Length: 212
Image (cartoon, rainbow, N blue to C red; front, side, top):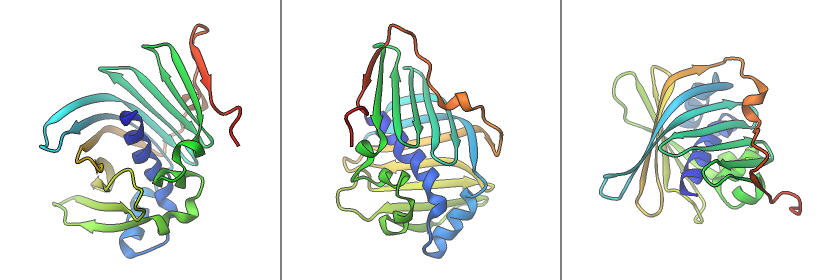
């Protein structure tokens, strides 16, 4: 579930950050993210312990389409597909032949990712500051203001004005680094990319039916 929470927090931040109306650093971040109405890329996701030693490395593909759709597919060393379609979260794990469907609000309520459906609260929930950056890089630190936060900060890095790297630290001192490659933005994405087709013998756990 840690893999899931990291991925969702990062991707949902990208989805909603454009709506932030706050300080100059926030506006600079908006200007960089604004062209990213759609995005496809490969990623390498590395989790480091509090001594900065790698404890997990995942590779996969992602796709994002505003408003409110994204796909995060881990292909190595495990296979997992995560899809969000504004209101529902789909988690497919082929290794155990299970599809979990959960209401997005029940997962994100009380966390920064809840902003997916409450974009007007972004300025109240996050502080955005610039970080000193090397040439051709622009780095921002995005910090949640809530005490009951799931992470301490997310650092968003752009190289030549293109999203290139994300760094995150949780409350346990673990660090997450996501590096993107073969990035394509503003491309037409097929609608079925954000739909999930699973075999008939998969166990479907639908937790949206009784949710209010």
